Length: 153
Image (cartoon, rainbow, N blue to C red; front, side):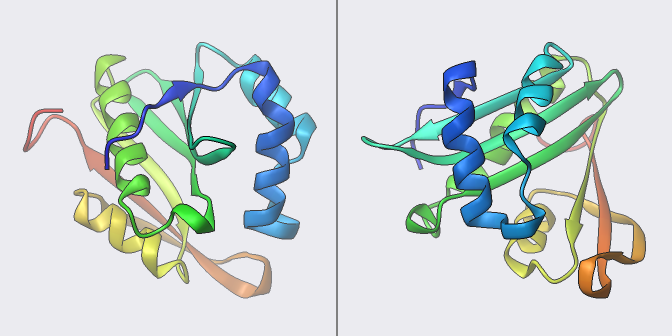
């Protein structure tokens, strides 16, 4: 997918918070959380993709030196199945490598099969399982990818 990725800016936050609720319900980040995340720049970096009318995907990264953490990747339901999640993940990996990270880590719900497959296809491997971490007793999978091995970003 060819989509233009742009940095998240302050005027985007209300739309992001509304989309977050649509996508994640009770687990959504609040508008205040989004303000806090954006205030965390340059350590925190968020990007988005728009279609003609609205945000259709977004992603974020925490630059922690040699290890960067994926904070979120989300794709609007109407834009799923077109490679946007992969595009956003690739963008985060490129930005992490550019910042000097040697490893990228993330956490994903074990029942999110689509996301788990995306991460595995992208070279992430299981580091740890956090049993019953999410509401409803769903496990969290902690995954990592070494940026010093394999293909160049």
